[in-house]
Image (tube, rainbow, N blue to C red; front, side, top):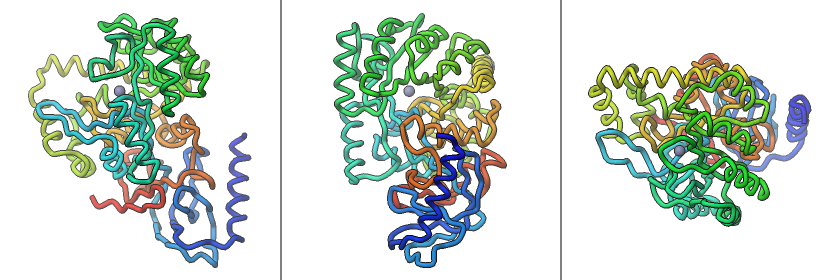
Length: 429
Ligand SMILES: [Zn+2]
C-alpha cells in the first residue's frame, strides 16, 4: 500500500471519527505537534487514544468529547521508542556488582526513557516466558516485552557462556528447538554465527537450514554476527536481520549494497560497542535521565573505569570506535534499514538511556533526524508486524517531548511524558 493511500485512509478515518459519539475514559492530547516518522509528517492536531489504540486525529476537538483532555501546547509527539536488542536482567558495570532487575522491572524502568517496547534476545527462557505472559494478562505494566526466549547456538557457542541456552548440533536439533520456540510463541528467533572466532559456530549450512525452519512458522530471524564471514553467511541464509557489526573489518560499500539488495536489516548495537569509550570524554553520565534510571554505583563504576584507562587502552578503543562508524556510514550510504538496539545488560550500556545514545550515534553517522527516529519507532514496528506510526489504528504508545527531535535528535531526551496502553506517565526529572 502506498504511503499516500495510507495517509488518505488515516485522514478519512479521522474525519469519520468526528461524526461518532466519543466515549469517556479516552485520552485526547490537544495542541501538540504530531511527528510521524513513517511518512515524515509534522502536523499540529489533536490525538485521541482509547486504551491500546489511536482512534482519531482531529483538526478541531469533537464537540461531544467528554473524556480526559491533556493540553500539550508547544510540545511534540513521537511514537514510543523500541529497543530491538536488549537483555532485561539488569545493568552490568565495571567495578561493581550487577544491578539485577529482571524483565518486568526493566520493562517499567525503560518506559520512563520513552521506550514502550523491547526485544529481549536472550535471558532465562522460563523467566522471559512467564513475565511476558503476566504482561499479556494485564498483571504487570511497562514497555511491551517481546523476546526470542532463547539463543540458538552451536554446542559451547556464544551465549552458552552466560547461562543455559538451546544448542544446535544438527538439522534434527534445529527443527526440534525451533518448533518448540514456535509453540511457545517466540516473537523472533535468534541464531548465532561466529565463524573464525574462538567459540564454536553454527555452520553456514546449519544457519541456512535453521532460518528456513523459522520461516516455516512465519518467525523472523535475527542473526548475531561477529565477523565479515558471519555477515556473508547470514545473507546466504536469507536472515531477516543481523545484529552487531563485524569486529574483524569494516562493512565495505559492496557488502552494504548486498545487504540492502537482499533486504537484510541491521541492528548494529553501536552504543554497546562504542560507549564504554565515549563515556570517557563527555558529560553523558551527568544526564538527569541517567541518574533517574540507573543505580548510582553503576554510574560510579563507569567513572572509575574511565579514570583507570591507560592511553594504550584508549587508543585501541578509539580505533575500534572509528571502524564501527565507518561500517555504519557505508550501511547508511547503501540505504540499509537500521534498527535501534542497545544490547543493554552488557558493558557500555544503561537500560533505557542507551536507546537515546544509539539515536545520537546514528545521526552522527549520517542519518537525518527523521530517519533516526524511524529506526527507533516505525521501522521496528514494521519488523514486529505492527502498524508503524501515529495513524488511526496504531498502538497508543507515544512519547511527548519538550523540544523537537527533528531540529536535533538529542531532544528525544527532553521527555515531558510517556503514554502507553492508556496510562499517562508524567516525567519528573
Ligand atoms: Zn545481546
